[in-house]
Length: 353
Image (tube, rainbow, N blue to C red; front, side, top):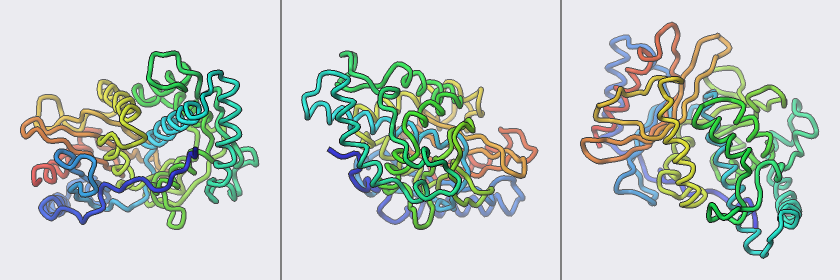
């Protein structure tokens, strides 16, 4: 039993979809020519889900999708995902070995997973000049994150109540303390090692999902270069973020049960969008963001930057999409003013499919 199983599927393995790409490029140029704010530096990718579930040929279109951007709380998705993967792996280990007490489970996790984590810790963590020795060598705090299942779910090893509350806080309420709890429970070596092993982060180019800060400043942060700010501890490319979202939508991220649990958290987050960032589409329209995670942060220039990963329903045509956008600079605009051009761009690609 291993935590690290190699690269996950790439549902965007085929070339982009020409009609969607043409619509996206044309609309962006029209908006740019008109002097519309926020569009010139925007990174965005749109992926069709309906009819392509589980495959590697999802139609997609993108602009600047390989830009590594500081994306603030959007990266909490990475903490959620890796925690769910840890639960699934621990559950499998306990089931395979027939373990029935927590002391036996914890001993097996330590003996089996800890050496694997050491072997897969990215050099950006293990050789960091800013992290402390304990940060570079941390292992998950298994008892903080996991416990024996109580029969309320299909897992023999499940999340502790504290960890379940942390998911609710960071994903639904969109607050920082739950993210800090989760990251402290996992540690950078496992969290970033898992993402890199999945192929969702390229250590050579420093592109992809990167989360090596705890949203509280309690632990030092390991940073990588990004295009929209100074070095960042919470960054991603739109492409790798939407790749994760597409696998999640297809119930292939971790497994069907865990994927459904993660989607449930992101669906409840939609009820709170108005208190974090206005929905990219007002209620009652053709397009509805059914699941989401926002990122709102301050750049070193003190400008506010917006990002989001969402699953979208086309209520007229009965189709679903995954969308990620980044680097929306608010720059004196209201959030609504900053997001209207983004919605226009996304709608053009959606309608072209």
